[in-house]
Every structure is written in C-alpha cells, then in structure tokens.
Length: 115
Length: 108
Image (cartoon, rainbow over all chains, first blue to last red; front, side):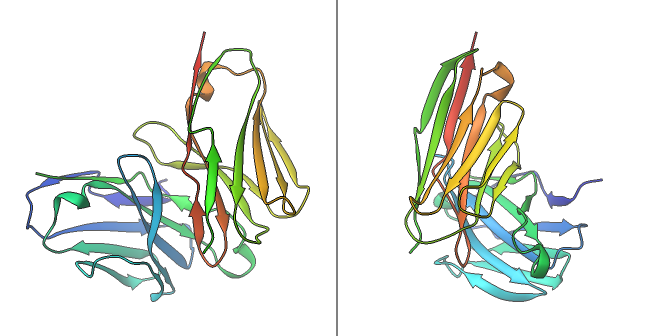
C-alpha cells in the first residue's frame, strides 16, 4: 500500500506549457507539502496545507498554484513552464497535533524536465 | 531565518571504516530529523531526535543531538556498501528546513 503517491512519475514538456502534478496520501494525515529538489539535490519547501488551508507559501513564482480539494489530496499546477522549473517535485504528508513531531512521509517524486 | 548546514558534502569511504556526518543549525530548535535518499528515489525517515542529548541507533547508524551546540551527528560504524546514499538532516522551526545533504559512497 503506497502511503504517499504522486502522478506522474516523469513529466517531459516544452517551455510555456501548463502542467499539473497530483498527490494523494492514505495515512490519514492532515498536513501536506510540496518540495522542490534541484539538480544539486537541494531540497526546499514550496507550500504546506493543513486541512485544506494554505499555511506555508514560500517565495515561489505565482505560476505555481497548489490546490487541496480535501485533506488527502494536494495537487500542484504550474503555468507557463520555464527551463528553471526542471527539478524533482516531492509531495509529503505529516500529522499535526499529537503527531506533530513525527517525520514527514514523502512520495516518490515527479521528475519534471522542460525542453 | 533557520539555516541548516551539513558537512561533508561528499564522503567516499572504505568498507569497514567509521565516519561521522555533521549537521549544524542556526537557531534554537529541538526537533531534528535524519533522512536517507537513494538515487532516483524518495526520502526515507531514519531518525527523529526531539531533545537535548537524544541518541538513537539503528544498525550501523547512530544519530545524536546537542541542542546547546545546535549540532547533530550521524555516525557510521563499519560501513558497508548498502549504506551508499545521500543523507539529509532537517531541522524544524515553523517549517522543515533541510541541510545540503551528504552523498556517501562506500567502496570495497
């Protein structure tokens, strides 16, 4: 049973296109995240949602728009893709409240390549 | 703003040897995490350290936390090839901040 699943695993597209990445978790967590990992493996948070509400919004171009239809899903839509958007995007989830100190669980990543 | 630094960035070590990875962070925090990432794979949680002096061990890996020094260490004992991966520490303030990662390669 996959705890945090992302689709697609690979995404190759041209500059200027719009694309979406989907994420679902079946852990019953109430907080979900999007991270970006660049070519040097540096990992940085982009967004965080708690119970469908945006709680962290880092300095990310507004071409990136997260959407959380329910607490088990957090999707990422990217408009007008640029070469610099090429990276691996990870979805993660964790539990707030008594589970606050527990580690975040990560998906397998979506490898986005912009041509 | 919380900053997290790891060293070394790259570590090539022989099987059977011991080594330590260091993780320094810039502001007060008592929540420190270690993750492992294999090439092309996801991040796997290794350790959660929640208090000063916390020490946790799993197999050949041992992690510790010194909140006064703002330092966590990941010690590798008698390295084996299967430990080859990238190791990240992450420190929690209002959000999780990751270190730069240490790419470990263990050779025969």
